[in-house]
Amino acid sequence: MRPDLLQRLAARQRERAAAQLLRRLRVLDVDAGAEGAWVVDAGRRLLDFASNDYLGLARHPALVEALGRAARTCGVGAGAAHLLGGHRAEHEALEARLAQWLGRDRVLLFSTGYMANLGVLAGLLERDDLCVQDKLNHASLIDGARLAGCTLRRYRHADVEGAARQLDAQPQAAALLASDGVFSMDGDLAPLAELAQLCTNRGALCMVDDAHGLGVLGHDGGGSLAVAGLGQREVPVLMGTLGKALGTFGAFVAGSAGLIEGLVQQARPFVYTTALPPALAAATCVAVDLARGDAARRATLAARIAQFRAGAHARGLPVLDSSSAIQPLRVGGSAAALAASARLREAGFHVPAVRPPTVPQGQARLRITLSALHAPTQVEQLLDALRSVLA
Ligand SMILES: Cc1ncc(COP(=O)(O)O)c(C=O)c1O
Image (cartoon, rainbow, N blue to C red; front, side, top):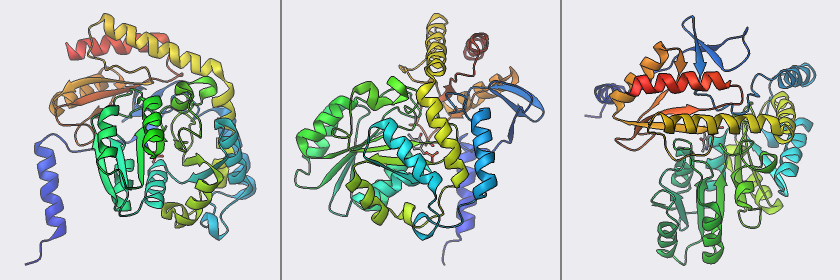
């Protein structure tokens, strides 16, 4: 008899629950009356240490104003895919703004970072090709290679020699090496200069997903490529997201005119989907100007990161080796991570537990993210709470 898919789904749910791996949707509201990084959970105010709004732009009055103003003229939705009448002047303006900021020939907007990664990898790679990736890359990069149907070979985290071995295993195949710039669950930076050099030596195309570096790191917030001093020549494919440090929603791919024109033709997650709301593109233009120009915001964030790290070391907390806004504390088991997260909630902090399969088995953690919105006293309060919860 044919298996019942819904019964199987229910069985998987039970397995997950037994292993403390069930994910739960929580309704968290923003605290409309309060400035800063506050959320409201069932009527209780919590300090939010989970958001990727690293620069505190998501509720910035200039962005909210730009969104409203643009919506009043061009409406809320684009109404169609980019190629079928949904492409507006606001999209063009944002693409030009991003290209200019990042020193790239052209930019193409996507509706999400997940779709951008699927679009690039499945648009570029064919069955006989090779895709080489860091084991800790974001799921969307892994899924993009799977969708392309090419050979996917993964190397040990940040292991450039391992990456070389994977490329050398198929020296005749057209190849793309993809890496997160800042790893989303560990917060560390990829060895981008070495990876880019490896790609040059082996004739592979280098792609970086800088979802968590853009706006946060480097001169003008140019991201992990700016830190490594790499441009379009060394890393021809750059993916960035708009829903993290830029505070809005969506994503983009930046590179040569040839790359972008090819993606317009071949990237199915670009072709077959409704365009990003144009008002959101207008608001994101303002976000780019703020992220690029407001060095003080970035300096505040850097100071909070330094404060957190120094405080964590002083308290003997098991903080990972990360210089970015992502500062995870490895707890180990899933049950322990869930319990720590729950105790932090009781103490007034929203810090989620991240468990397998998002992270490897036995490496469940508290994923703490810092923001320019956090005050120094709030960081100290979190550190004290972490010490008592993890004691
Ligand atoms: C490294 C990385 N790439 C891509 C994505 C996907 O971006 P989006 O949320 O815009 O789909 C994320 C996070 O969501 C991410 O952390």
